[in-house]
Length: 318
Image (cartoon, rainbow, N blue to C red; front, side, top):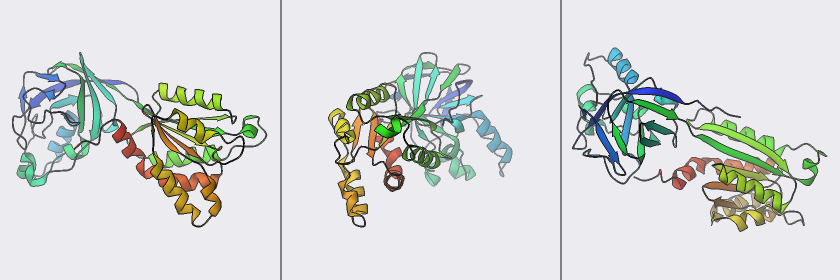
């Protein structure tokens, strides 16, 4: 399944900066970006919220509905870049923006309102930046000025579901755990800002085939791989062994927690050798092959998935 949006192009309306935090930003003829953000801006630094963007359409809607009649100008919502023609509400973390030579990566959607600590909030009692603005960091620097074209390139959140079963791979029985896992993932991400792409496959319990599948997933930028099957103690149960051998990092705590939680009621659950690991920038979870076990494991895994992405891509900096 995919809910991917397409590349789009808009225009830079204004570029703005302020020399002190908590103050209104002011339009300037151009801004120069480097690895620390915008030169001369108070929010420049080695962190993930270097540059803020807001759509001109959001400002116009705010002005239209403003009960005070106060018209907000460029930079007054503390945005560094005001755009036109792009719906920033479609953007997700890790998406890219290109303005000439400049490349930006989306790192945060909205923010917590500072209330009385925000200049415009103190004046009009409201702000659209917390709900409709985005934040980015600089991947490649350069100059930006009003009138420049700004290109939005979405990055898919790729997830691969792999069922390991000799019999299912030969068509001798229907795989149910893989489709159940796909449905759980679709349900969890429904309504979230990620551009979800889920693929699925059924393979034999074969070390070489699994290794090739995992290498392919990591090379293609897949964020998560979920395997089902092959976590027990049988002679063909090889899934955790392959993943552990390929891992750059193991994440033992989450699987230990799941085994203990469900093993208290069902001792056989303790026989699972499921592992969680990181291969490059891909997180791999090996789950047992039953639908019930998949449901139990995913109840524990989904709440941490987004935080894992933030950690891997260093988006959890404060």
